[in-house]
Structure formats: C-alpha cells, structure tokens
Image (tube, rainbow, N blue to C red; front, top):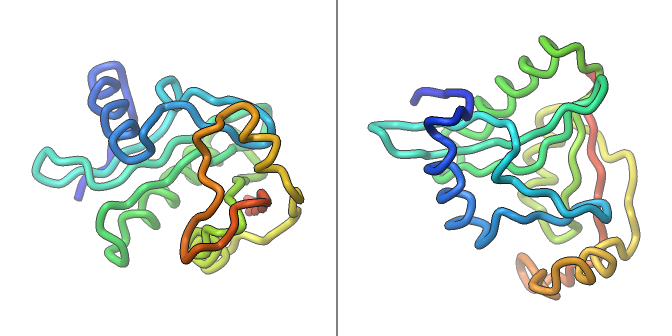
Length: 157
C-alpha cells in the first residue's frame, strides 16, 4: 500500500472514486454544501487501484476531516490515511482535527473514538437542515437507524 497527496494528475480519478462511493461530490455538513471535488486529501493505492481516500480542509489552525473511505476494512488503510492527514495538519500548524458524522454511523463513531477522538457536540436534528440543501439524504441509515443528528468529534494535536 502506498499513500499519496491528491494532485492535479490524480484529481479526475479521485473525483470518479468519490462519485462511485458517495454518488456525488457534494456533501452537506453543518449546514454547508461542500464540493469534495476540490478538497485536499490523501489516497491509498495498491497495484494502481485506489483502496482508500481521506479528504479534508484546513481553516486557520483547524483541520476538518470531510470524508474517509477504506475499501478493505480492518487492514489499517483508514488508520494510515488518518495518521498521515493528522501529520499534514501538524505541519500546517493545526491544533485541532475535527469531523462530523451522523448518529447512525456507528462504525465511524467506533473508528474515531478508538483513535483518540472525543465526542464534543451533538447537533440535534441537524440532518433535517441538511436535507433542505440535499434532499437525497436518506431517512434511515445503518441497521435501519433514523438519520437525525450530526455528531462532532475532535482530536487536539
């Protein structure tokens, strides 16, 4: 497995990967529509095939993780991408890495907490606001759990 920074050469392939796995490059989080096709990030590949991707943005001294995908779970791909992104944040002078996930995403809650992130806020019914910007957000997620709330996690670095 190799990890590289997204660059102009890889952008079209990365955007196709995002569309294939998220069905769009548009993400709505904390009341904002974010275009992942322009986001910074890192991707993992093996034998010229993308096996993982993390996107993020840095604003002031904070890094916000926008997305994290690993095609082969429990093989260290997501952890490696997250760790390298955190290093990029440190190099950029960030003191905080944070993200939003939804209440149904139990695997993300498990993954990030296991790696030192803390739940710092629950934005109740925030997904109702998101659906006004992106009506395609489903009503139910993993295991039939209603998707209602955004959960904010952070790691101080």
